[in-house]
Amino acid sequence: MAEVTQSDTIAGVYVVDPTIHGDERGIFVETYRREWFPQGREMIQGNRGDRQAGAVVGLHYHLHQADYWYVPYGTARVVLHDLRVGSPTDGATQFFDLGLQSDGSHSHRGIFIPPGVAHGFGALTDMTITYLVDGYYNATDECGVAWDDPEIAADWGIADPILSERDRTNPRRADIEAQWRPHRGLRS
Image 1 (cartoon, rainbow, N blue to C red):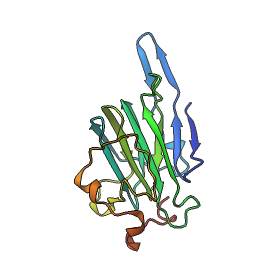
Image 2: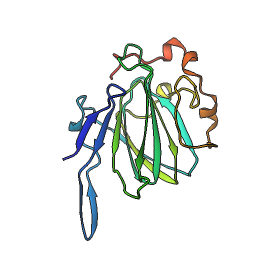
Image 3: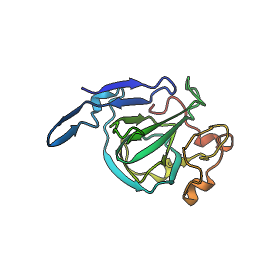
Image 4: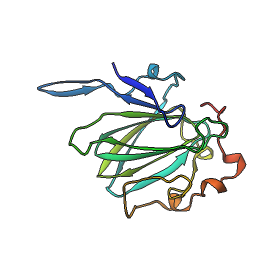
């Protein structure tokens, strides 16, 4: 059975270290189970993204949608930042690597990200990320905050990032308009 622990840094974020079953044929990993999380959210859409080394995606956040991330190939430096007004961890930043580790092993770790927690990743290598979401795509619930905001102090592990136009122009945390600031009570 997987070991599921709540983050010590950001309330409502859960880290999953799954059990890996293997033999001479290879491995089997159960990467997600709804029962692992207290909210018991039903994930209704699965997505995959392939990124080249040096790409930075984020920081994005949703007012209503939760994500579950898993990196089956390559290495991603994940950055999380709590934007939720009223959260006991509002303003906290956390980062860690998913996927292939520096020692050549693969962690198979997954991460549950509740609404209101800004999330992004830097592709430390060419990589693939899969993510499950508990809501269908909704453009009005796609928000962003500056990837390089000094108040967030993200460590992307990348010196010269490749960024989308959207990610280059997201506002700093201090400049997010009040109606776009997540609150602890919103499906968190």
